[in-house]
Amino acid sequence: MDNRLTVTPIVRYTKGAFHNEDDVVIAEEPLSVLINGEPAFFCMRLPGNDTELALGLCYGEGIISSYEDVRSVEISERDIKTLDLIVESKNSGQKIRSKIIRSSTGSPFHEEYAKILEQGGVLRNSLRLTAQQLFSLHEDFHGRQILFNETGGTHAAAVYGYDGELLAFAEDVGRHNAFDKCTGRILMDGTHESAAVAVLSSRLSYEMASKAIRLGVEVLTGVSAPTSLAVHLAEKNSMTLIGFVRGDRCNVYSMPDRIVR
Image (tube, rainbow, N blue to C red; front, side):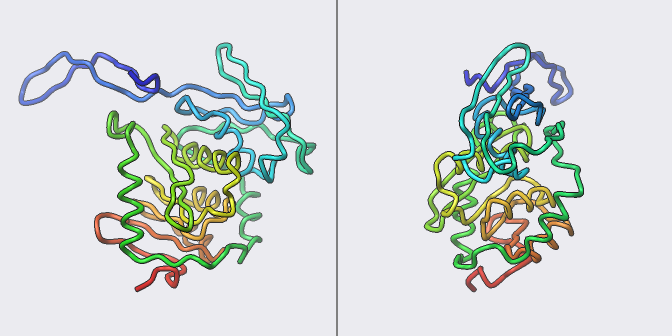
């Protein structure tokens, strides 16, 4: 069995009777991330793709601007798996405030929001999608959610290129973790300039919009609803935000010109 899955005994009630059965649940374990030996992040995550997750976290916080800023990654495993990124960048000497990132929450700090709002108009505007192309990306996305289909316990994120090619996909117990793992994979592969569309299984919150803007995608799309701050952030940064993509329908909340009618 996949080591990201765990079998646990349960008592299931159905049709008026109790039954002893085994069920499959998703794994959730802690990860500690150090920057140059100093504590930076502590998060709960689905084990796997931990280097990508650490890179995505550092990129999102502005600690690195590319994979070239990372000299090495040192991994130790005791009670808690720890990654120490040896970073050389203009921001690597800044005092790092250690953050606890829960699987259901993102960064709570107001400075990030103010910083992103100041970036207005930084995104590209060369992508045009038909509604059918959008639905096809979502169909491909849902077909890759193997762990969710097994357990119902994961979120997923994917990033596609301008020709519809998959650049990164990740599942995790945390929606932020899934996106950060995609970002880390893109940094490692050097495909940043090709990133065009991000697809999420989760609510389109301010934190998820900020990660998409930082990555530079032109379209952020998902199966669920956006928040008002996400819409505001998308409009401020000229990103197309699309929610409730289900079957053959969707709602476009900002920059609708990228969707060809």
